[in-house]
Length: 164
Image 1: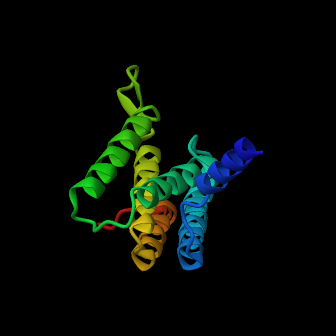
Image 2: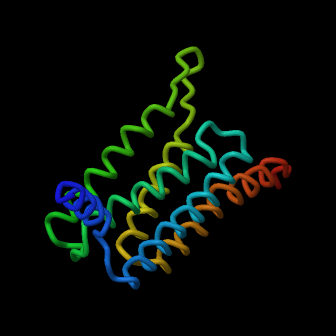
């Protein structure tokens, strides 16, 4: 019976990395916020028919928030946290490169905005993980303005006849 007690105790301890209820609630709120904000940006991209849509943005935002949370309660400027953030953003940048396509026939580049939105979503996840919800919400709202309203403004101005 002693072997089973060791196994049960070890297994229980393995899942007790966060024992404080306040820490559990804080982590849950941050991850839910990452899912929400990533979802908002992903929904906008999906409505525009882009390859990186709802699921991609949710996964990128929540994964980056999770990685920052997992790095521990360190200050932003401390070396370990800066390494985590650098690694995340570089890795996501590599992921984004896969969405950029150059058409040699007409020298047209496609996918830059999609790549930028995924990278920006990762940055929002980092900010959430660092515990700055107001900055993350404002950034997501500004991103929606840029992604959704800016094309409408340019389209409207393109339709107008030039004044002479």
